[in-house]
Amino acid sequence: MSIVTSNALKDSIIARIVRTTRIIDKMVSEEVGQYKLTKPQFDVLLILKFCNQEFITTTELSEELMVSKANITGIVTRLEKANLISKVVDENDTRSKKIALTESGLELIDRVMPRYFAMSDEIYSKFSEEERQKLLSQMIFIEEFYNSRR
Image (tube, rainbow, N blue to C red; front, side, top):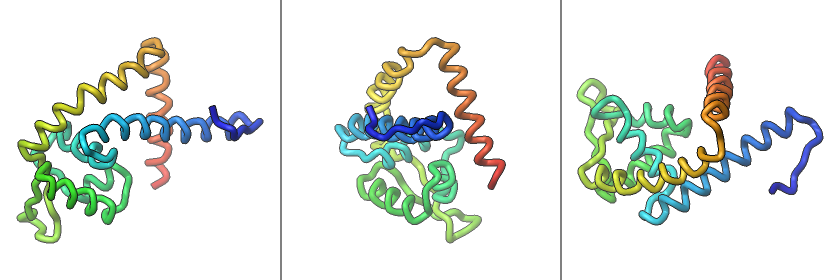
């Protein structure tokens, strides 16, 4: 429980969303840390696993994860050194790099995902299907609001 409180409902909601996000990030970090991954590295591997294309650019990764290109560069460099991803130069734009999972990266993410999804399922089990749908629609609303302001 947080020691910070607010009497204003609207302030409490935002504070609770931020705190909950940090809690989930910590839980994920603990799970993926058992595989010598950081949460940002796991996020990149997960996106590569589930994106609907063979390669993804570093720009697309930074936009998807909402982090700077410099941050993505560091994450990608470490994943490449660990032979979990490969980088190729985009033939249409030689300044751009395309990223893909290696076989080792795919094997690792396939080992990590069951633990990640088990953790997610444990959290979701506390909510009814209706509550999950409502929560999801509210989060989508916040994301769409953010995107409309950009």
